[in-house]
Amino acid sequence: MKKDIHPNYRHVVMKDATNGWAFLTRSTVKTNENITWEDGKEYPMILVETTSASHPFFTGKHKVMDTAGRIEKFKRKYEKAGVKA
Image (cartoon, rainbow, N blue to C red; front, side):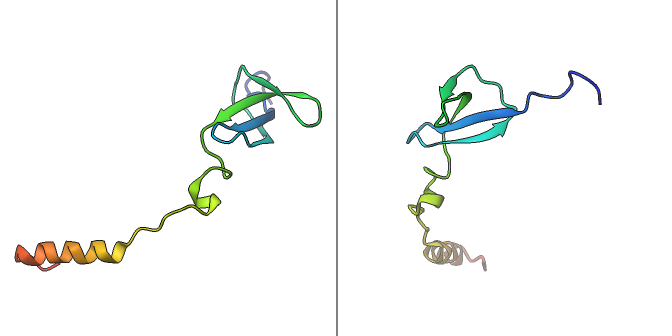
């Protein structure tokens, strides 16, 4: 393998910006921030906007839209115009 062509694949801490939840993983993303993890070691930290701890789909706060009403409204609109939908 060629030298110096591969990115630095190392342990990093991904931290959720909305609720502070963090987890240790591996990544090649470059960052200037560091954080001391639970094991006492210092790791690079990547601040992310959304994780499974804050996304509405995973937290159970996901809202389901009423698509049946929207479809009926669409059909009524185009029936008035004489177009068969």
